[in-house]
Image 1: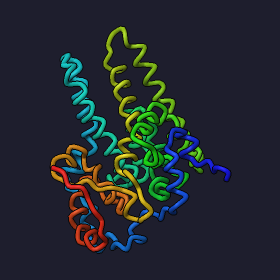
Image 2: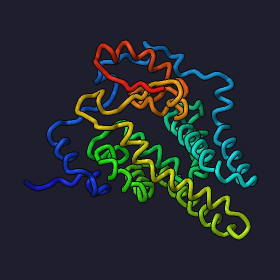
Image 3: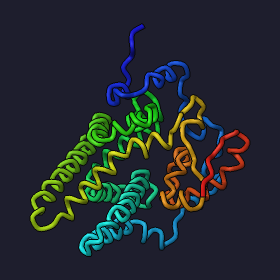
Image 4: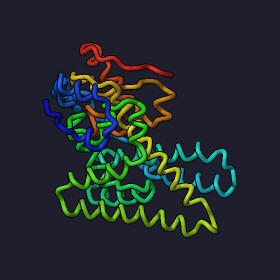
Length: 299
């Protein structure tokens, strides 16, 4: 029997052969609330889309505040604190960008384009490529052409090995998906900005190592994308609609992850801002109980 090469095989050649077998044995159904028999958002409460004035003001400022904290810690030579501060900055920046690309951060369409561009500078990656590939992931969750979800079909070691080249391949995938020349120009501009940022960081190294250290931290963070955005939240996916993403509930750990652990809830209602996902989870509990959906509870 001839082997059909899927996107996961082409981009992640270290994928387990069992993953290919599982996809042949069971077709993956689209992950959405209608297919799962869940209510629309208006039935759960449109207040889930709301944000307080403080949230609307503070949420966009948080990536800049954590960046300032990074610069302060570096200037004070508190190097042991740098990883902790950077992890906070990285999580804040990624989560905020995630809300922006889903239209859940409250920005108008034109403003959204520029906010994505600004976050591209902070993250040293293309915000528009992030949006293109991520929205495709939502509409083609774990299907053969879902690049972003492909690491879920790998072993843990395989997902780790995919990390070093993940960001470049993610950008290439998004660029191929993009139909609009305008969107492609945004992606190219953001790619150039990232490269320019790295070049500048190298050039100023004789005076300060802060920018290059920042670039290194950002690269390490991007290497963990296959683990954090696919392998863990889609761990051991099955063919059932609600079995393709996981939900990690709790008070402390989800809060430390800025509610990114509510991954199943996010896939079902992506328009809900990250800070309202715990309330969404509470309202979905009776429906999950009826449908036999299990969630993992942590502290």
